[in-house]
Image 1 (cartoon, rainbow, N blue to C red):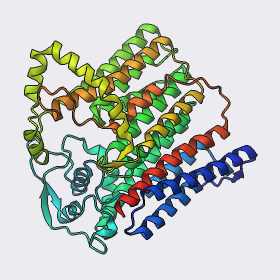
Image 2 (image 1 turned 180 degrees about the vertical axis):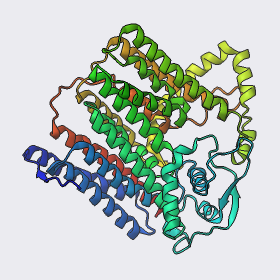
Image 3 (image 1 turned 135 degrees about the horizontal axis):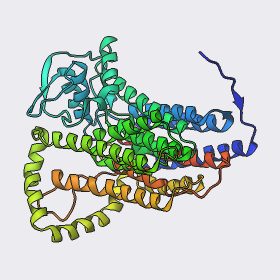
Length: 498
C-alpha cells in the first residue's frame, strides 16, 4: 500500500477562515439546538448534537489545516457525514425505505428478477420486525440484541419496477450482516453503510475526473437531502451518483476536445445506465450531442452522436414500457383508488382536452416549482424540516457556481442544456401526473425536491465566471456553508426522534 506524507496547510488565511467558520458553526448549532430542544430525553439530544458538531468541525479542520487531494477529502467528508445520518435517522425513516429494504433482502436470497404480475414477494420475519418500528428511533424499540429471524414471510411492496442493480450495495450490506450473524438492526445499518460507501466512491471519482467544476459537484453531492438519501436504502444514492459522475465525465471530455473510442464508450455506458436507474433523467443523455470530438470527421461524428442517443432512447423507452406491465402495488392501491388515480383515464383526458390540459399543466409547472424546490429542506418522510436550510443552500449554490471557472460552453450548447433541464422537470411532473394524480386534477401530486437534484446540477453548468486560480480561502467558506446545513438537518432530526 502506498504511503503519502501529510503536509500541513501553510496559508494562514485559510486557517483563520476555518477557525472563524468553526466558531460561527458552533454558535449556529447552539441556536438550532436551543430553539428546538425538547424537555424529554434532553440528555440524548445533547450527546448526539455534540457528536455531530465535533465530527463536522473535524472535517472542516481537516480540509483547512492539512493538504489533501480534494477528491479524497470529498470521500472522507461524505462517508463521515453520512454515517452520522444513517445512525441518527430512525428505523426505515426515508421515503419508501421499507420497500427498498425488503427488495434488497429479497435479492440477498437470490430473488433477482421480479415477476410483472406478482402482488406478494418472499421475505423473512426480520424485515417485518423492522417495518413494525418504522419511523422510530432505535433506542425506543425492542430491536436491541434481537437476532435475525429467517422465518419465511411475504411483503406487498418491494419497488418492483426498479432494476435490481440499484440495490447491489444494500444487498452486500445485508449479506455481510447475515454472514457475521449480527443482530437484526445491522441488516439496516450495514445496508445503509454500503449504499453510502458506493455513493462516496462514485462522487469522489466524478470530482477526481472533472478538470473544473469540482466544488459544484461536491456541493450538490453534500446537500443535506443528498446525504440523507445516500445514507439510507434509497436507490437515490446510485441515481444521483450516476448523474454526478456522468456530468463530471462530460466536463472532462468537453474540456479535452479530442475523445478516444474507449472514453466515448464509457460515457455512452453511463448515459444508458441513467434512464435505467430513473427514466425521467434520460435527458442527461442529451449531453452526447454536445461532445466536441474534434478528432472525428464531421459526418461520422454526427452519425456516432445520434446513433448513441438513439440507443439510449430505445433502451430507456423499452425499460419504461416494461415497467408499465407491472401489477399495481397493493400497499398503494388504497390511496390510488381513494384519490381516483387512473393512468389510462388520465391519458384519455389529456388526449381529449389537450389545449385545456396543456395550459393548466404549464401553470402547474410554474406554480409548484418553488414548493418542490423548498422540499429539499424537508427530511424523513417529508414530515419535518428546517426551512432556512433552503435559503442557505440557495445562497451557497449561487456562490459556488459563479466563483468557479466557466466550462466555456458554446451558446447553442447552453441552450440545449437548458432544454435538458426543463425536460427533466417536465417529464418528472408528467410521470407523476399520470401515475399519482387524480384524473382531471389541476395540480400535480407526488413531486418531491430530491427529484430535482440531477436537474439542478445539469443547469449549474451554465454558471461560472471565476478564473482558473483556486482560492482555498473561499472554499473554506463554502464548506462551512455545507457543514452548517448538514448540522442543522442532523440536530433537528436528533431532537425530533430522541
